[in-house]
Amino acid sequence: MEKFFLVDDEEIINAIQTRILKSEFPDSEILKFNTAKELLKILKEINYNPIIFLDLNMPEMDAISFLKQLEVENLEIKPTIFILTFSHNEKELKYVKNNRFVSEVISKPLSIEKLEKLKQKYILLG
Image 1: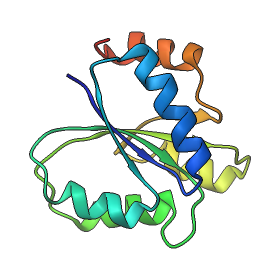
Image 2: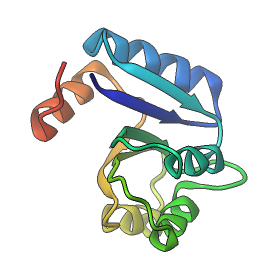
Image 3: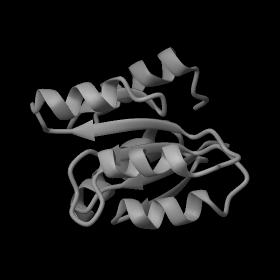
């Protein structure tokens, strides 16, 4: 069973993404977070490798700050991280695209078509 973590400061985005993921992965477990700080805390406590959809731009701790913090953490897990963004900022996009923790950067909004491509590319079970 897939375990997804959705991280976005906008509740409506998390709700939409939940609906899309549930349509493709009906038996999956989905946890939603409003901040990357919440996510970081949970990642230190779990013993499985979640699939994370992480918003690039959020208040308090954005995805870049989160990824920098992951560099110094000694996590025993290896999550699959997909960055979701509306951003066209080349500096931000270059950083996340080249980060060792990021599997792929996806333009918002997440759609069933985009999720299908990820399933095929990363052999996610459905």
